Length: 205
Image 1 (tube, rainbow, N blue to C red):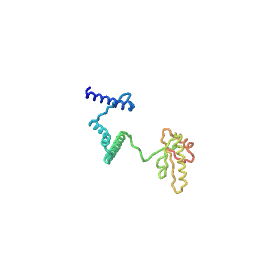
Image 2: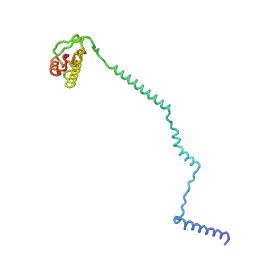
Image 3: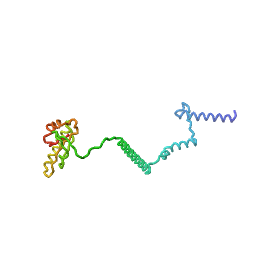
Image 4: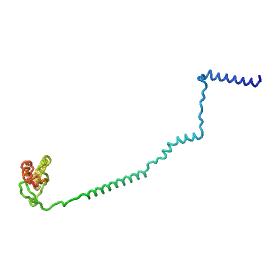
């Protein structure tokens, strides 16, 4: 055998012994054979991608516009303008709605007048001239509100009578339902329905 081949055999035998010693006797998973775990190679482009990914949240935050006094002022001016426009438009629509209302005739305010009391006697404004009047507008077919309110009127008149320095106040009941409140109905209301202390001596149609 040549010296070179013997040297190779010696090295091969030494390698087998080394692998048997290190892998067979001391390594815990040598029975299943050696497992090679591939290493991932990172290139320069991968590192750049990692840096870009980590920097994205910061860049997104930097792109957000912070709230400034100028922005708040613009919002306030815009809101005030919208509120003013809404108010003006509302008033304009109300004026248009009022313009569509049709009125007939004019109210007869003031001037001479003539009514009829519960006895059928005509009564004019001249009969009450120079006196203080307490006018109550109601109707005899009012079962709840009118009687209770007339009691209040009577109490007010009683309190006024206890003041000697005050002028006499004359109560007058004026019906707002002349179609049903005729002379007979007014007489019945004055004699029976009205409280005795109501002091409503003049009931008119």
